[in-house]
Amino acid sequence: MLVLIVGALVAAFLISRPIWLITRRWPNSIGKALLINAASAVIIVIAAVFSSAGDGPSKLYLVLIFGGAQLIVLTFDVVGLVKFKPSTEPR
View 1: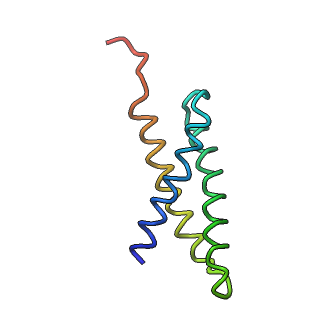
View 2: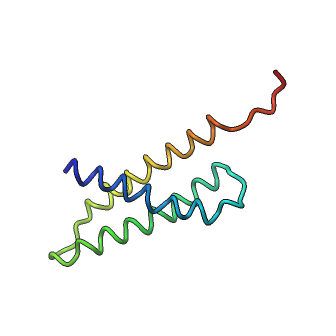
């Protein structure tokens, strides 16, 4: 189970990074992070459910695992945007 969770985190990260590269001309914002991670979540959840469907009935618990992994990636993206945002306040 731990291997599945780590694999889900790696997959979520690897699916969302090319989308970040495609949208690099857009200004970095929380809305951009939400949009990219939502698109990535749809891709990764559909791929996970369909890849396991060949073994019999689909395993819907994969939606929770891969969706949760995408939420973790979203959290890191948002924290990175907020933490490393250039300040406009004078020093």
